[in-house]
Image (cartoon, rainbow, N blue to C red; front, top):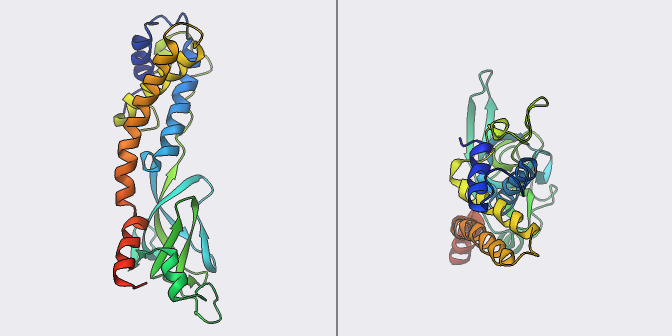
Length: 242
């Protein structure tokens, strides 16, 4: 995994400020941290974790507090043994909520649709990725394996390190190396935006932001095509099944 010092060094080269005269190293580090967060905001799978979560009674379920977005629900889990090995249960399929609503208008009501330990379907709203719904509703004893997005950890130099020495920033970044270029572009965008009053810097800032957005936008569009909700909507519309 790349180091923060390597990412910042690349940005300093593009900024033609390799001695950090105009943009101090602590400032570039703050923008690197912002870059990681913005990447995860626009592309949740950039920082993900596979978890087993306990379900609560009912159809509504929430992801763990330290997660930022639901990426995928994998399966029901029957149990987790002492060694952490997961004993799988029934597979689940992601369906469009409109299909459940149309075919089972009372699916949230445990009096008419008996809640069970294992779910057959899940559905979630792309605009609310911190929660999802299960069908049938859970009886409060179920568990599920899910993939969630998490926030990259903070990057902080040691308290006794020299903040003006690039070697002090030889710390692992929170994302895979494939996002290094995007992070460099974000840092340069923020740097030039800060000095927008100087000739040409507004254009330079815009260029780096566009390159950052393009790097994520292309991938984001591809992920949309692979989204369980996207494919579930097509299949459900074609078959009329839930």
